[in-house]
Length: 105
Image (cartoon, rainbow, N blue to C red; front, side, top):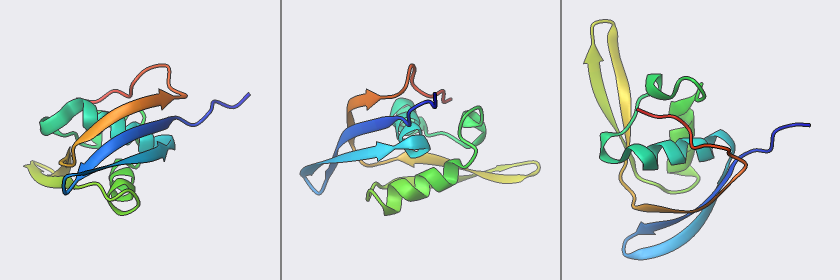
């Protein structure tokens, strides 16, 4: 039997107005990771045990769900990577299909 996709229902605030969103699959896991790490944010490497396309999940959260996610550029000896930081206030209301929250930094 296939494992069900995770579903996260959350309340987000933008411009003083709250709205409810329902996010599914790996994008839902990405939302949970961003909420969990808060202002510190996280990189693809920090969630690489489950998020093979973390930047794409953040892109979907931005464009499909209207969340503000800042990407800070962090240089390192081999180049640079992005640290994604959720700026939109989000309250997780329910989580289905996950035995545990995704790992993050």
